[in-house]
View 1 (tube, rainbow, N blue to C red):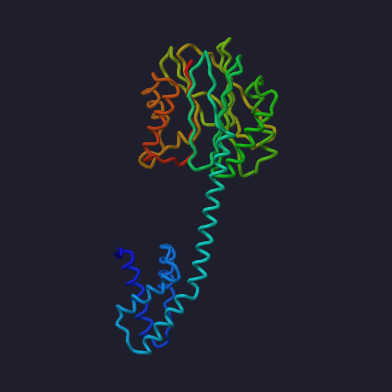
View 2 (spheres, rainbow, N blue to C red):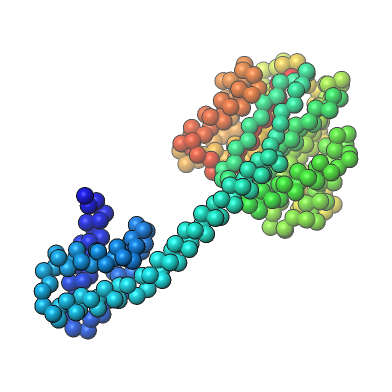
Length: 337
């Protein structure tokens, strides 16, 4: 049974054929014929299928004279010229795209293995983290380490998407792993070291934002520095209010000798810290970016839950605002003390 699309193609082909036979100069309308060729390619019509389409068009055209039949064959020759070549190129492109998709799947799986953030067990804090790429490759990165003495939390975002951002973030991951001071260095010092690595190794068109925080359970002090990263939230249980985590500094890679200021605050029982990338704050609702107050309201709705549930519920609510699609990589971390 012919579909509506088949009937439309046959009708268009028949119209072109009739026009060609009726013209003495036997010129094929370029724009209309190219449009039809593109349609046939998109539908996967094989060259031999084109002959069948031609025969069906002849039946409907009522062509019986020898001259008209010869003209129709000339029409078929002109339609076929270029069609086979274009069809082969179309198939080669599809095969190449399929190969590229396979390679991207492998690269995505490898990146997920390399950058898969693990949430460590922690006796003095409940931690939840979630990260989801907008595409197959992510430009977000987070790392949470509990060495028994300090809790170190890092969250970063490459300005960009896709493979270049993913490769850059992998480089940052290994740079952090190679720093011997990584577990004991102050946040400002670590960002200064990473900034030099990025400035030397990353293209000038790319830069990285990063937040680096350290919590010492013995002193109850949370210290942090930021390299142009999206401000997080601090919740004070005693005051029952949310505040932005104060942190300023140039993004990594913009200036070789950039210095990073360090901030510190005392953490009390019941306090919370929330860290995020701009994929969270740039969620769109009714074509406008949501306000930070809206994110706070969502956190308040579920802040009584374990940290892992908070990040899941907040992410689900934000994705729902965008019909469950992401325009940018999304990373959200919750820490309950």
